[in-house]
Image (tube, rainbow, N blue to C red; front, side, top):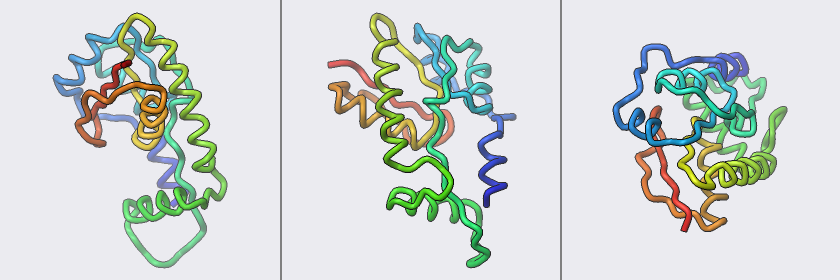
Length: 160
């Protein structure tokens, strides 16, 4: 599982063109922000933009792993189990859920400062995006749009 997680974190988005809705969001953004993960940077490139800021603070909350050999499950099933264990406090060798929440608070403040007078587009990752969204909501931002958590999905927040 450790190797699968490592390979996934280093993967790109080959063969996944940006949908028109994502291109439209990218075109309307004044600032493009990205995590330093290869798939996030490849996504920026697929959108035909350059990031103004690349920062690991926006990187995905890592999955813990163990050396368990049983039960034999698919990597996706293990990923779901490990995420639940992580949320319940098991972090093993990776950042804890509490640590990820603190990092999300830093990331949210950084996004808010960049959004002073122009829209900001963050190319980030599922769990960290959710954690950042909670921080933005706590700071008074309102979620205007959310089209899920799949690749190329987007959530839009506006300052109230």
